[in-house]
Image (cartoon, rainbow, N blue to C red; front, side, top):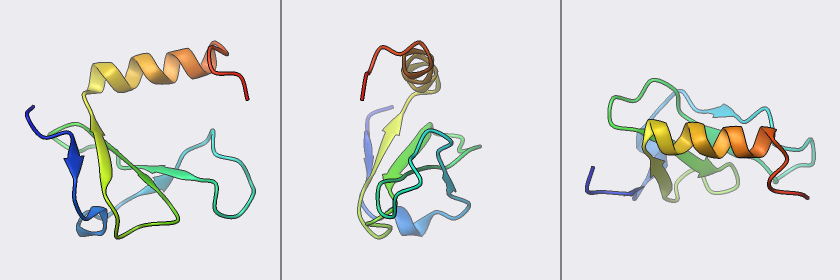
Length: 73
C-alpha cells in the first residue's frame, strides 16, 4: 500500500461511528469496514476532509492497544 490517506473521505459510503468515540458532539472518529485496500478512518467533524488509511494488521494492533488501556484519556 503506497497511499496512506484518502483526500476526500466523503467519496466513500458506509462510514460508522467508532464504539470508542465519546457521546459528546463532535468528538467522534468514523471507520469504514470492508474496504479492499485497508481500513479508512476519518474525523466525523470533517466528512469531506481526508481519511487516514491503515493496514488491517496495523488497525487491529491499534484497537487491541486501546482495549488494553495503553492510551489513557
